[in-house]
Length: 117
Image (cartoon, rainbow, N blue to C red):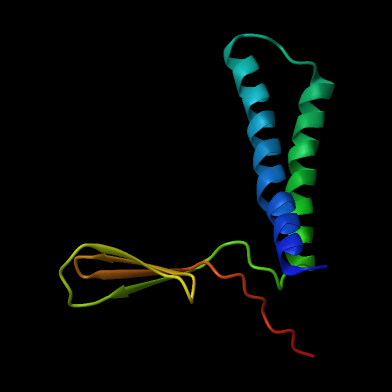
């Protein structure tokens, strides 16, 4: 499989699905509790199990696809500079944000970790 496809699969199974599952389940549990509605016990147990399975699935996918990075590299450096600027370097796919006494570099390129044997 190519890197962008692996990236999209990892993004889906590690970030999007768990976030949606936990958000919808907690919303259903909390909103019905605060409104005074009683949920059946089997539904509450099922939602809690769904959250647990979603977290386990996230851990498994992040371990299987450890060589694909989902988030960009972010480097913070304290420097003796005063200024405000935003720069983008097209060749390296690098965003640079300059704030007073702080330099933030965001590298958005998809890199894979080298597999050591």
